[in-house]
Structure formats: C-alpha cells, structure tokens
Length: 429
Image (cartoon, rainbow, N blue to C red):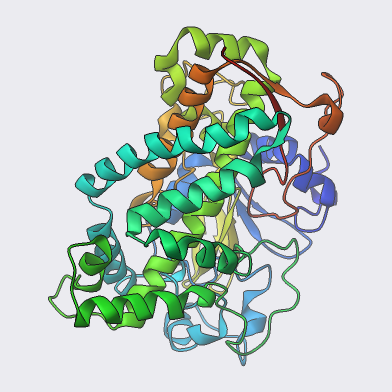
C-alpha cells in the first residue's frame, strides 16, 4: 500500500471506509509521520497506551485543534519544552474550557468533581430508568417500520437518558434538545480551516452554560432533594466550592458529548445486527452474548476514530523522534485493531476473549467517565429490540439490497458514525 500518497485528513473516501489504511498502519507502522501535514499518527496499541499515560509530555490541549494547532497561537513556540508557553496560551485553542482538553492538575480536580456526579448508586438508578425509557421509545418507533433510527430513536433516547442522570426536569427537555442542535460535536469537520486567533466560537458547548449556571445557582439558594442540588453542592477534592460556571462546563460536556458518541454506537451496533442474519440469530438464541457483542462493536468500529495530542517536550515514540510542538493523532480506532494485541483484528468475533481491552473509551486519566452509561444504553436497546421483534432488517428502499448496501457516514477524521440508518421491524404478535 502506497500510504504516503493517501491524505487521511482530506480524502472523503477515507471517511467512508478508513479501516484499510488504519489496519495497515497498526500492523506495519504503529507510529507514522504522514507527509501531507506532518502529523504523527499513533496507530499501535502499546504506543497509544504510552501516549495516554504521559499527559505531561503529550498534552490534550489540542484534542480538537486540527492539523496545525501551533498556527492558532500568536507565535509558534520553539525549544525542547513548550509546556509553559502552551499553558499560558490555552485560550487560543478550541474547547479550552472543557475537561477533555485539560491536563493535570486542572484535569485532576475537574475529573474528581465529575466522578462525584456519576456514582455507582446514581448509575444503578439511571439504569432502572433506561429500561422503562427504552420500551417507551420503542412503543413509538416499532409501528413506524421502516424508520430512520438515528433521528426517531437514538438521538432523543440518549438525551433523555443523560437528562435523567443529571436530574434535568422533564419540562426542560424540549428546550435542551433545541440547544443540542447548535452544540455540535467539536472536531466534526474534515479540515481544521476556520479557526481564529481568538476564543470566539471555540467553545461549542457554551449554548448549555446559561441553562446549567442558572439551575446550579437556584439549587444553591434553595436546595431540594434532587440530583441537581447534589451537583450544585459538590466540591473539589480540596474542599473548595467550584464556581457555577465551572460546574456548568463539566455538566455540559457530559450532557452533549455523552449523547453524540452513544448515538453513533447504537447506530453501528444495530446496523450490524440488521445486516447480518447469522449474528442476529446468534444474539436471539444467546442473549447473554449481547454485552460481549457491544464490546466487539466498540473495538472494531467505535465512535471515536482519533483525537489530537500535542508533544510538549522533545521525546521519541516507537523509535520515531518527536520534537516538541509536534501534533499527534492518537488513533483509537486503529489501536483497537492492532494484530499484536488482537488476533485477526479485522474479524468480528462476539466471543473474542480480550475485546474489552479496547481503547474506545480511552485509558487512564482520560477514560470516558460516561462509559458505563453508554454500554447500558446500547445493551438495553439491543436486548429490548430482540425481545420485542422477530426480525430486524436494513431497509432496501433506503440503503439498497443485500450485497449492494450504501450508507452515509460522518465526514470527519475524528469520529465514526452513520448519519442515517433506516430499519424495518417485524414486531412480535
């Protein structure tokens, strides 16, 4: 494969099917400096783990900053250690106020606050709600066959799940859903053009801040026995009380980002079930395999293909010199298919014993805190659909006949997901 001729960051065909290239890189060049933009693509599993375990060297500050993050600063930093410069100029980077772009020690305090909101007790209560919600949503969706699942089911479903987890009153759901239309996932474009040397437009979750700040201030003044009050009264590990905007930023990230990735996970999982009769039959006969099926979906085609890092210090990775200031693309979607970690990685195996070692939800301090929630939503959706139908099919009217299917995917080098999925159901009598 002539990989140097392929521009991963601009070729629309690679958005549709990136796995030929990613599989080749994971197997042959786990650390690869591509020639078009000078990005170091980290596709090997162990190499990706090394990056994730060293936030002091590989900063998350540029996680969605595109292929030339240094151009966003007033000047390009030089030297073998640019940590001080980057930390003092973070306001020039997109999503600079979000936990996903933070590094320790700021990240440590923010994550501790967030994990205090997603307790095992709260997740258990939320899962009980998910079971009820799933049937309620399927009551609407199943009679519509064929139905566009992403819009009719996955998007409102994931919003309602996270709204329940956060204790958002039901009367506020429609307004937040409207805001969600404007709060798109960061990094969703295929190019990094359009960035400015200011903070304006860089924090795409700002649309939620006013709402959550107002709720937090209300609960601090008039506490109730609800979840939002618990969020409003939460403290940092050192005992200090965060400003309302600090809490609002963390909650907004959980609210928005958690929805989007789970929507894509549900779509990818149901596409495979609907398009592979043998897989569907196996799951119908062995419901206990559904959790393992979800893990293999996450491994082979997870919703995050890659995310950027910035080398703060001159180092080396996998034998490749990495000067300070080098942008890296940490390819979760490739590392999960590294043959050194997963045998025959392109094969989809429900019974794969080590599938859960995937990096679809990150690793270490940047492990996605909403991972248990996403797993529950996908698992329960699949279990209830299998229970309430005798057959789930791809709509040939919308996607073509078997063997000639066509699907549209997000045109982005960071995320993997269907934009539409039309399904047909045969409900149980």
